[in-house]
Picture 1 (cartoon, rainbow, N blue to C red):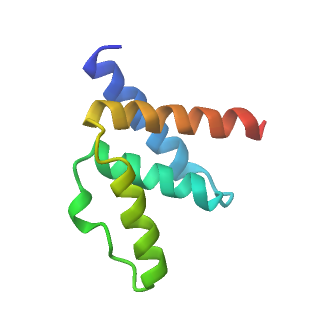
Picture 2 (cartoon, rainbow, N blue to C red):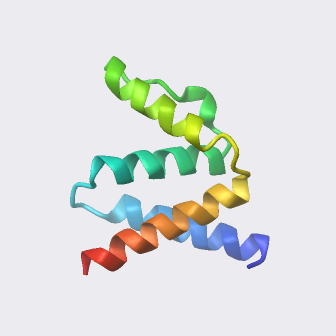
Length: 89
């Protein structure tokens, strides 16, 4: 997959998540959060929650993705979205 194709697939996955109205399981949300932050290089605002426990979970999720490149994070985001919707059908 080329870089351009990856970017398009990533944006499509982000759009499908943003357009989904049912609640997501917490573990899926944390994975998507961390992959998205890593893929878009926006980790600096990792702990914006007013609830310390939520901030801790977000920080931990980001910590677990620290070894990923942007492209790897995009690919994992896409795979997580695909798997989530595959098993929801």
